[in-house]
Length: 447
Image (cartoon, rainbow, N blue to C red):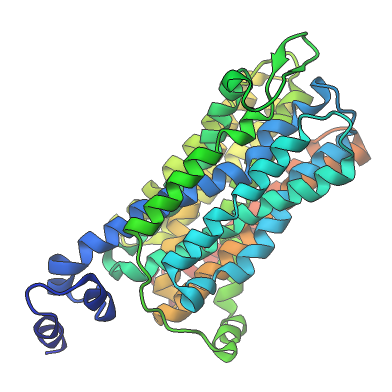
């Protein structure tokens, strides 16, 4: 049997390099004896590196609402545009990052792409200390943050090959879900870092509208040390798993399959809304409920959404149906958006915020369950990996589109209500697609 040949070739004490060269996660004996430990090491380090990437990617979301409080003078349109730029750049980077682990190695690319995070960390931290920094400079720097958003696709494309199909949903859910926690981590730590001078190491404070000293640059600079430590972890514990290099023809083959586009639509409804709301949440709260201080509570939504992502993948594995978990989650998402809208229209913060937390929860379920659907729709693991990367790339444009939709609604209607009408229609269409093509009993696809 192929399994016994593999184990026989490896012997009792193979080197790590030999194990990687004979990687067969579907071989139960190989997995238990050699594969599981190595796969989990890569998963844990990859997950933390991805968490750090989400911290940097959404860092601007915690800063944007502070700008005009500390001496900058930007319009609402400019603020919302800046909030959307990391999403635009990050989503575009994902289109290319998906293929990099196969080209240069998963460990090598993770090391390089994580090191790149130091550029926006220091660049933006420097610019924030001078209130005369022009808007155009912030456009370039904030767009530079977007490179962190690309790391999701390369991380998911790489880590998926380490695990057998039976636990791939949970593994990808952990990598993505805990990685997504970086959004809530920056929301949670930003209020603390604003008040930390670090002994003057990061420069002088600025005075906000309430007359308090704030060290807004600390929100950036403080992440330099964790980034360097992460580089060491990647170097020590991650591996370059031999991955097949995709030809242009094989890459293009996925675009002729309708399920590529259908799954992209579905995943965009989940992750696109998750990351879009994360990017715009503080701005939306400041605009709609200025009387409520949410500096310490804004992290809850992203925290719940990210935390529920592994649960969505686990439920899909448990019930052997990612499509049904996705469908029910989308229905709950639709109800949540409607209640959020009612909370806005009645100016009920309690209703608005409770419904928004539920909305974030549903995005987590959809993200985890829909990603589990892809390997079952695309039986070829390499096509599955390509589709996973592509859907993740397109969905990330939600970080650009949602803030832009909010900005459009405010600019044209002086209210955000029309933006939620657009999101409601989008969710309804997604529900119909999920039910018709995947969740109904005679759809022809069990996923």
